[in-house]
Image 1: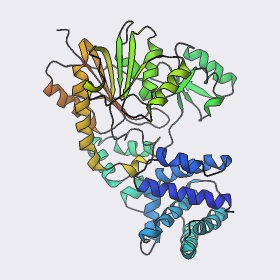
Image 2 (image 1 turned 135 degrees about the horizontal axis):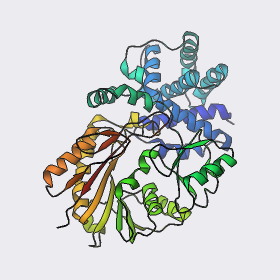
Image 3 (image 1 turned 90 degrees about the horizontal axis):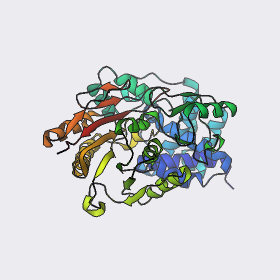
Image 4 (image 1 turned 180 degrees about the vertical axis):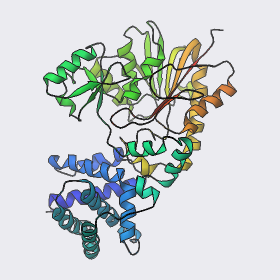
Length: 433
């Protein structure tokens, strides 16, 4: 029988190889977790997320230490050593355990001929410490193209964005306004011994001092709160929701914003949530059920309005478009490995197409809020500028807010340590006639 520590490291290496081959952690982690004992699953998750977060720094060190790259059939051992380096550099795991169990994991992965290499590389790493490097990708632990793009787009902020991306994001809650005031729920958290404070900008947001399992949060199962970053919560402050309105949440999964809309204005006529993912749509329903909310769910490509639209216009539309997700890297560090610079232009085409389609079904006098969790202008204010050139009837509504950076079109939040994610918002209105 394979020892649990050996298996843990072997499974972690397999997950990282899957990520390198194009799978996200959210895709490949669940089946991997099921292979381990319950008490080991949090450690596997921490190892995989941490190794992705510091991948470019760890990979830079490992490439310095290897005389030549491993053959493709042995690539799994490269990732096994990355896991070990992560534990040596960023965890409190005992050094002897990391070294010995990583060597044993070679055998678990059917690579016994590489045990000597693994032992030698890791012992040298432990003995010599982290090597100095002038390589930017290693220093900032990001792909070089992303560093250069951030530096070009945000010359005054790029380094702060890179540093924020490497810090684990805080856990933030949205209080269900139908159930509790924010002050009341802060009192409940205090009674439960959970440290927390109100968010600066989102009116129903609470940030925890440290992450907590949701089953420890007072009344979570009964719909008192949801987990949602502060930047994402701001959508309801921009929609200007009123009783009797028909609202669309396009590209809605997993439903956090759908639920936030329903919580913030209980007297809406209808909320329609559209998403093309048959796998993710049930997540929206689960969230609605827990919060005791109702919405009309549609499985469809929101841009293909002939497929799903019933011909009745919408007073308000939230368009949270598919994007590079470069504003949420601290929550999803595998984005550093999965995203390519060549992804941006096709995404911009999708975003502009969705904006065109949503404009067609917005009622005269209606309001559309465009949102992304990207920090790249090509997906954000430049999309809005391109749309405004094409659609001369659209008017841009200035966002008067204490958060983010004011741009020519819209407002950009950059990821901030111990605060919100990176997010972009723009508000458009259609004339009455």
